[in-house]
Amino acid sequence: MYFNAHTHLHEEVNHEVYNLYVEEEICANFSIGIHPWNASEGLKILPFIENYVQKKECVAIGETGLDRIQGPDLAVQEWLFRKHIELSETYQLPVIVHCVRCWNELKMIHRELNPTQYWVYHGISKANLINEILHEGFILSIGANVLTNEKLQAAIKQIPFDQLLLETDDSLVPIENIYHKIAELKGIPVIALQEKIASTFKRIFSKWNNG
Image 1: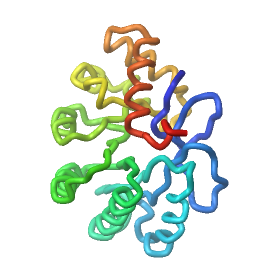
Image 2 (image 1 turned 60 degrees about the vertical axis):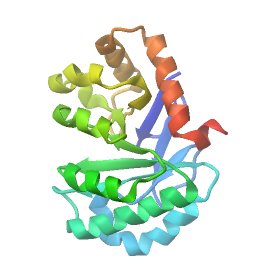
Image 3 (image 1 turned 180 degrees about the horizontal axis):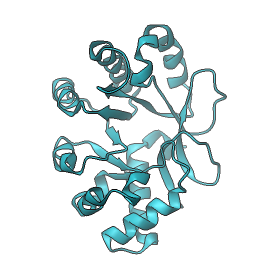
């Protein structure tokens, strides 16, 4: 079985956490949040988000986070991100985090809030940040960029299995391809990787695990 920690393309053939949008039809095992690019709409959308979060099919908050390249002012993004963390703590759900050139800000918020729930740093591409992100206690979710990013490939062995998830995000690359690449880089059979990822996935998305 291939567990997909974050996808914008719903497929029923894999075990996935689908990134649901407000007013979209609810599917099994979804996450929901306001992307930092859309943070200016936060005040209007937040009440709807909380309604979705209370659904039994909701297994995570997000994606949400900080983006220095796109979106409104960082102060607006940070205000909204903190609102998502409040939901995460209230409803005891992990957070799928989007972070672009804002690692220092994200790290400081994490240390300040000292959350009880897991934060999943999704789509990591900066290999030089991996050790620091792991040290802060984040879970790393690796996507299709590992197929072409040689620096990221070289850093994969640094990531312990209990902090590793795999995802497709908005890529059309099959999740199986990412599993095969990670298995190759880790030097283990694909079936062994599937077992390890499944264990981490069920621990992080504990509501999914409980059915």
